[in-house]
Image (cartoon, rainbow, N blue to C red; front, side, top):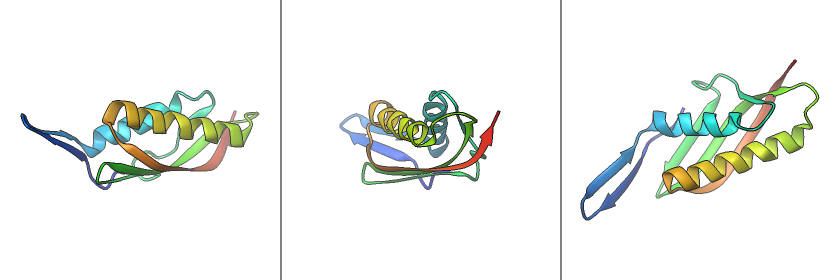
Amino acid sequence: MTQNGHVFRGPGGSIRIERDALAALVVTAAELVDGARVRRPRRGLDVVVADGRARVSLELAARYGAVLPELAAGVQRSVSHALTRSAGLTVDAVDVAIEELER
């Protein structure tokens, strides 16, 4: 799970994106990649945010027959893009572990 949320501070006040929202964003972005499913999102997902920078670690189940390095790279791109576009974060890394295959 995420270590913390992300806060934007501005002249009108602050905006906080809570850790559960960041985790949901990561899960949704990862699962948009055909053949990928996040395993155990409560335990197999870690999002650490500090100073507007994010580092993500997640465990995946992959559909049998998928080219695993391509699937993982697609998840990395999708998650990084979602966190940058939707949450305004700079993504330092998206570490992916493929833990199981599914039919």
